[in-house]
Image (cartoon, rainbow, N blue to C red):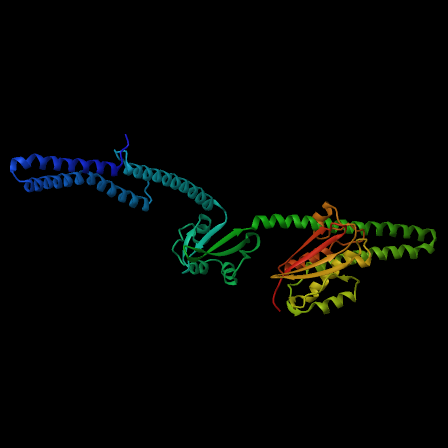
Length: 436
């Protein structure tokens, strides 16, 4: 049967009061003094009250001390303790809630430990070297890959990052000094290893920390290099065959005509041989230009002079106003990229009036769109259009879009292609804004 603490106290108080009154009434005739009898009754009532309070408070005090002890255990991360209360009252409810809280915290702690164990297992066994550097420059965490890379497998927690970098290969020290992300190589020849360095800053417990990631890319880069060489060899082989096979056939035909004495057609044959030779020369020259693209040299320029130079070479319209703010780009490279895109737009089958240039500047981004109303591109062509030497045109070299992509990425931007809703193609150059 449930009893409340307040009800028990009220019942006990009523019993003590009744006992005191009954004792006083019983002693009054015997002592012949009501006052004395009343004093004795009150005194007995006080003694009973003190005894009752001690009897009720002592278990509660023990319970409160136990609650304080378990709270300290919870603070220290120990959730294995529980409490027991024999009475079905408010303190029993408190103990039940306290035990339930301990159970929830115990389950959460167990789940957290399991997740931490899983995460630590993944981090320790990843091939990426990971280091967490505190504000003072000391390493507070490092996985196994980082230990093997920087300290021959020994622990490096507590060591200064500067000392580890100083003892590492010079290429790593140079990459760290440059700041930000980057690639660096260690070793020479067949033993050369390529690494990618990534650095990210964040705040942990209100203090700045830096996460340093070192990933070995040698295998991936070599595999990609092999694939690239295969693709380049296939394209060059295709172009050479397309040019040399007709030249060989034409030379044979010319020799046969000479043998027969039919010299009147030799001029036509030589002209065709010259055309194929010039096509092959243009292909090689375009390949060399693509392979030797220098790093961009940024300079301040305005849009109007750039657009005027482009219009002197090819016709196009302007969609919307040009930005008034100057920009910092490599002007010859950007001009070449836009010229390639505008030429492609003219060759798409659109009318001259349908070729448009649109320039928009938003916070941090410069977006340049070249629009046409041609036939657009199929999904297969869109997927390969930016690949060097890929072309769907019989006389095309496949370098126009690839060169524009290379120029955009050299500026820290990107290029994208998309078919327009009402027909045609939109080629977009998105460049980061560098203040002039």
